[in-house]
Image (cartoon, rainbow, N blue to C red; front, side, top):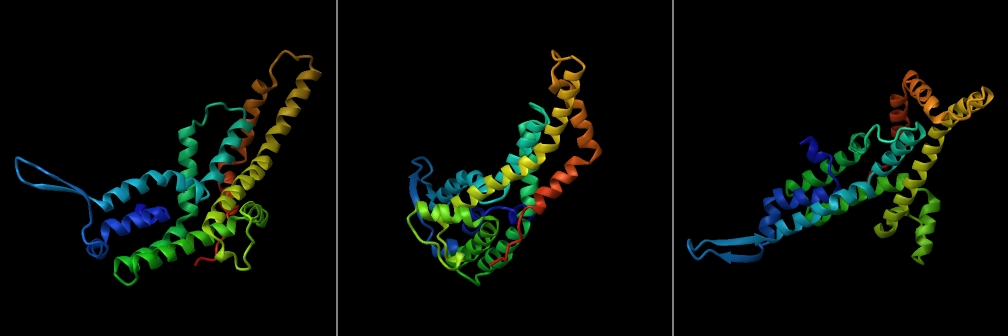
Length: 255
């Protein structure tokens, strides 16, 4: 159940379609098309719900990147690797895994709110599917608004030739989504710049020492790499980085 609680808004739609007998009964057991087996006489039908499920599954990776803080985390981790002068270590799969684990941790309150306020009432036939989706949308929109800066919102609204509403919760989702992504990229580069500075100082010090010693043919990057690794380990860099990333996420007001 923990994995179910940590899926996206589109996963809630899948769970609602797959697990709710009420939704299946209300749909009238709609079949997309049927096949007749000439040997056994059995009718094989492809349900419309299966088609919807397979279609939405293809959008889940994109929604994970566009509607969560995954983008911010993976960009900062990539900048950290570049700042330390490491080309392939940690590998991309490890960085993606770290970013995904942090995303699940940070987004857990949002998933829990969607599960408790939208999915469970719908599963218990207390609200309709449309009402459940509206509640889930409010939860994810509240999180996205908390991370979105006003400049990004104004930029997207201006590009759409519309006006910014007084109540930001009334903002159209098609405008909120690109604004959120733009804000996440901006925040990621700001954090990456702050992380890059200490390693840049080490590179400058090592390069100055090598030039003063007349060892200009020796690569400063090769000499500074062990020092950067040592400093990063001594200050418990991974713990500091994880704390900085998680604390950079603004709390949301919920639905």
